[in-house]
Image (cartoon, rainbow, N blue to C red; front, side):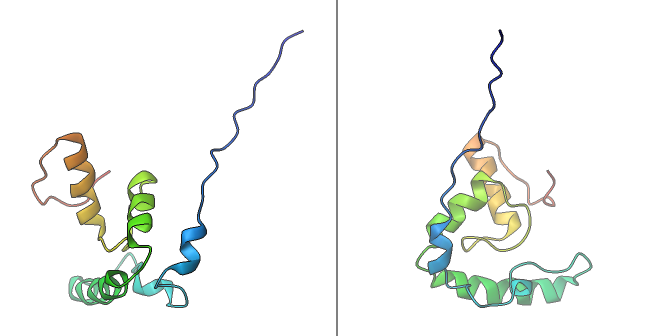
Length: 102
């Protein structure tokens, strides 16, 4: 008789999200449309970063965004480009400011 082992999904705690400053704010503030114009993106991200800057769970949100990794939107007071730089720094890689490519 053989035994089949089934991998279970890791237990992830998202309880921090209920205390986030972004609760109740439309998701469009943090995640822009694919065809967003550069100036509109700058303005939207500035608003999202202001919300995140005062968030009591900013660090937990950033850790989530780095671990998943979240490729789009503002998470943990960072833009996708900033997270790309942080992940590269963790790997000891220098970034050139090139577009966010995964």
